[in-house]
Image (cartoon, rainbow, N blue to C red; front, top):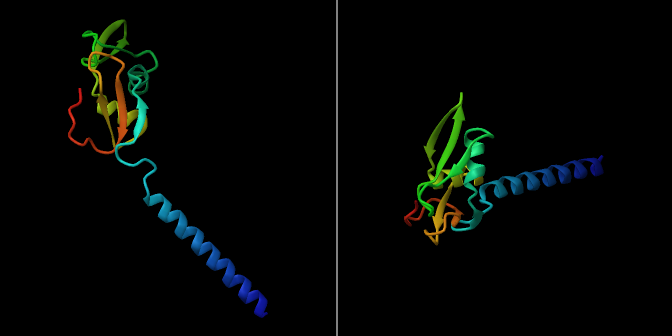
Length: 121
């Protein structure tokens, strides 16, 4: 009987330690603020945010002015892209966008965390 009680207590202790470890790991974010999450694919964002036929374009040819082009009932409309919102949609919040070469339309990178106050497009 003593072995059964000890075994049950050991099992309960093991479950308690495992549950505590799981709860602690849930509180630790996977990416620290400032972690580069990768390049922002604005075309993929438009398709995810609207529908699979949406596409992205920038009439200015630089990093600014991105729009999602949508076609409904034969009519085209465009929606301005908030690049930080696009990063949050693609990588989860909190995230923000940063361009290090504003002359390059594909230079947007996404970073983890709230925007630290750096200018974005």
